[in-house]
Structures are given as structure tokens and as C-alpha cells.
Length: 355
Image (cartoon, rainbow, N blue to C red):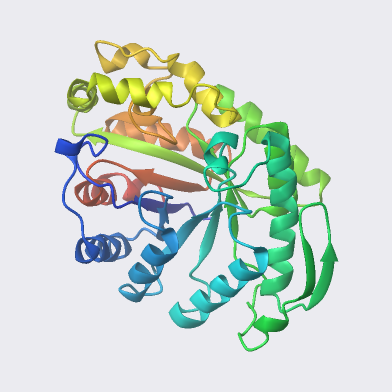
């Protein structure tokens, strides 16, 4: 299968948007311009993360301003919206914006994060809820009408209210998902289409991907494998590491303290694996944290979520991405700051060498 590359799109945009002075003013027109640029440059879509804007409002606005080549990958927390309502939202989106465009990024979140929204489930419970949730959503989007009594949901005549919306030709919205715990990997093996992971040194990542493939095979399934990475790509290696150094230099001590302190007690295994790569240490120079040639976990010192960047010249960045392809990765979700300018840079330098 040919390599698929998506970009990242979020309203908190700029050269270093985790700081107020590094953030550029963003409005709907700018975001629609960014989405149209992503489509024109040849990316197959963009991940819309759960930032300060609701992804459904943002995704609908961007889909209306782009063509079928822009496929939004919407982050969804299972359990925050009822499975019947999510199915209705998905069917409406596909009917209005074109079949085959929508994709879901399954985000199970953390125990503390979900409590803010009124969902009180512990780590392994979240994954059992997720498995039940997505099995229901798949049945609903395929046009079934049914009753259900499970651990987390009881539904009566589920799907009856969706009869006037055309069911999906493929039966369900493709599910993309990343989870590193045994419970998360088991949900992925049984339910999702694309298994996503954050960047790690290839020797560590190989072990996890082998386990994912093994568990999927136990369910009679195969999964595509995707990788979420930041890129700091420049003409030379020295320029790329200088750009990484600048990100450290412009980040305030308050941001470091907030980002690292807010994750105390985090029960996500993916975050724990990432944290072990830098240990919460803010270095004087970025390269002190290099864990593998050109691999830098320092982005997670000042921004939430995936925090590994590939830092280097075009040739080095392509070489690292090819290492991941050799592990079976066929999908990349890439980003760089600022999003608009770096989408051009990556499309002109890296993308032609990946396909």
C-alpha cells in the first residue's frame, strides 16, 4: 500500500503557540485557507485535535470549504456523546459533505481529563467502554435497528431515528486509534482500522507494533499502522537543531512547570513511555535529549499530546521516516510550526521521497 500522509490542523497556531506571544491570530478564513492548502499540497487530510474549538464545528466548516481530497480526522472521546447521537452526527456529515471523507481518531483520554466532562471511569474501564461504544456506533451507521443491554449502555430501538439518513456504504467510519497499554492494544486489535502510535526509537517501537500485529491476528484481523510525528526539517542538520534550540529558548519557565506538573499522576501508558525519554528534564540544548539519530522527545516538555520530533536535514528526516516504514508504518500524521509554512516545506522536500 502507498504511504498516506496527513497534516495536523489546530486553531492554536503559530511559531510557538504554547506561548501567547508565539501565537498568531486565527479566524475561520485562515483555518479554511490552511485546510485548502493542505489538500492542494497533496496531503490526504488533517487531524483535528480536541483543542479550544469543538472538532465537529471546525470539521464541518473546513469540509465545506474543501474538496473530497481533504478528509478530516476528528478526535472523538468515546462516552462523551451517546453512540446513537454520534452515529447521527457521522451520517449527517457524510451525507452533507460527501461519502468517504470522515474518519474518527479515537481518544480515550485520561481519568482526570474525562472527569471534567462528567465521565468517571478508570483506565481499564475506559477501554471496555470504548469497545462497547464503537461496536454500537458501527451497527448504527450500517443501518441496523436493535436493542442492546451491555455493561455501559442500554439502548431500545436504537437506529430507528436514523432511518431517513442513508447508511454508510462501508458500514462504519474508519477508526484510527492509539493506545499503548495492554487494554488499549486489545481494543485496537479487535475494533480499529489504523493503529496510531507516537514517535519512539525504532527498536522500542518495533516491540509494540509486533504485539499489535500479533493481537490483531488473534482476532483474524490486520491493521494499518500509523505514526504521529513533528518535523523540524531544514537544509542542514545544524539549522534544524538550532531551530529546536530556539523552541526551548522561547518557552517560559511557567509553561514548562505547567506542562510537566499537569501530567503528574497521568495514567496513560503512551504518555509514560514518552516521559521516560526525557524524564522531565529541560536541557540547555535540544540535542542533549536525542534518543536515536535525529529523534527528539523534547516537544512534550512544552506542549500536550505527542511530543517527539524528527530533527535534521531533508535527507536525514526522510531516512528516519523510511526506518519507520520498514517497521510496517504506512501512514504518517505530520506537523511543524507554524502549520501553514511548514506544510509547504514538508510537501516540497519530504513528501516526494516517501511515495
